[in-house]
Amino acid sequence: MSVEPSPETEELITRFLSGQLSEEERNAVEERFLADDDYFAQLLVMEDSIVDDYVLGRLTDEDRRNADLLFRSSLLEKREVKFTEDLIASLRRAREAKEERQRQKKKATLDNGEIVIPKTSPWLQSQASLNLIATGLRGLPRALSLSAGLIALLLVGGATYFLFQYRRQTRELVVQRAALERNVQEAREELRKEMQDSSELGKRLDLENKMRAQAEEALAQLRNREPKSVASVILLPTSFERGGGAKTVSLSGNATLLRLLLEVPSTPAYPTYNVLIKTYDGREVWSRDSIPASQIKQNKLSFVLSSSVFPYNDYRIELLGVSDGASQVVADYAFKVRK
Amino acid sequence: MTTKSDSAAFDALLQALEPEALSPQESFRRCRSRLVRFFAWRRCDDPENLADETISRLVKNIQAGREISADHPYRYVRAIASHVFYEYLRAKKKSGIETDIDELRDLPAPEGTEDCWTLCLAQLPPYKREFLEEYYLDSIDREQFAREKGLTINALRLTVFRYKAALKLCVENCIMRLSKVRN
Image (cartoon, rainbow over all chains, first blue to last red; front, side, top):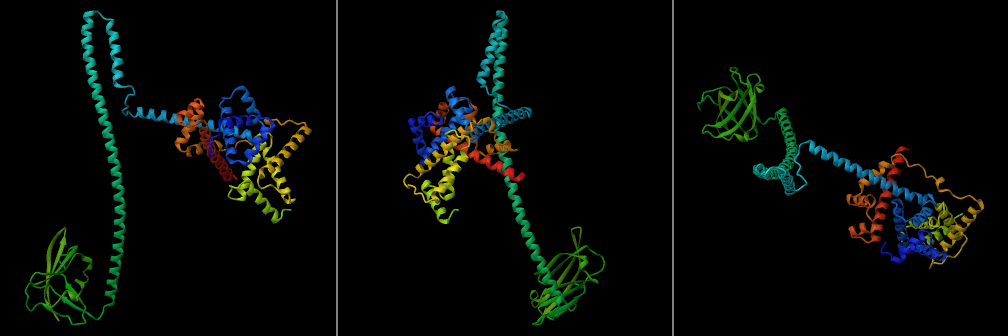
């Protein structure tokens, strides 16, 4: 509806709906509302307003009689009235339910012993208290009333002090509570982020596990294939001398892998072993920790390494047994690589 | 029998009657709604049936090749509606039976109607619900209420009308869904 009706139009519409127009006037209104959207909407709005007044009992006796004729003439009109009655009943129910919830909430707040700031201002409370005290003092003998007055003053002073303390503590508690709520919120946010991060870490771990499984599979396939380009050497524990006791491994051009078989002394046995390969000048070439004892087959520990790790040089291998976090040298091995 | 050309002629009439409607269906709905009110405001006890009778005669006249003025198509519609109204009055007088509105009982409200009301009121934005609560439950004079809300009386009426229309749609849809679920 784009234009507000003029007071004259409003009056005409009201009279039309009340059935108070002459036939000529009624025909004019009918012709207009049939052809004019805005006018038709104005009639509907005005009728709805009359329904409201009718249901809320705001009509004069005469208007009520006229409205009765309209609203009791057909089921359609009757339904309009019924709809408004149902709406009011539902609004009332909703309001009552809301008030009941508020009462229960308030009761729960008081039951929980939460701090409830009094609605009356402290000043008014103090003033009311002073009035009460003054009324009481007027009924006492003069001497007694002086002492009582002094006591009362002390009491009032004390009460005022405690009242201000109480207010200050209340404010502090409110501030602390707000801070605590903020902290809880921040903690929740952090927890959420951590959960998200841990989820991402989990995904990465899964990916790495998959990659590792693939690598191990590839390695196993490599082992099973036993290519011809593998050079093998069995090494026995030896002294640290770089002398003739060291075996010589010849890595020709087509030997891409070197298989080392270390003879491991049967006693003492360790749950895990560490292996370290160095050159004689102390440069670490290769190492592996925490090798389980189960990898030792027939007193031999086997490794397959890329021959590129071992250029022409003399090497020594240190085998350490590890138990309870402490390591002990089990054996030393020596070999030479020649190409 | 309605031929294709009759149907096209009726669509053209609907278009002339309701030029702002987006489809013939909407034109029909709007035209029927006006006719229903036409009879209701004349205090007829069955305005919907009389509106349908008017439309039926309109279709027959178009099939009979009656020319309808394009300038004032609703004048023609109103003329038919008036004929239907006077026939209704004559028939009523002849039968001598006065309609007793208390006998015209609507179907009882379907089960769950109250829940639909609760649901629809809850779906209403809080400011609208509070507005309706204040308007209907607080005994404030309408002029004063309008002033408090910064509205003219007519704007207040229109606001309430719109909120009620939205609620009516919601409640009707809710009841319809409920009855579908039950059936």
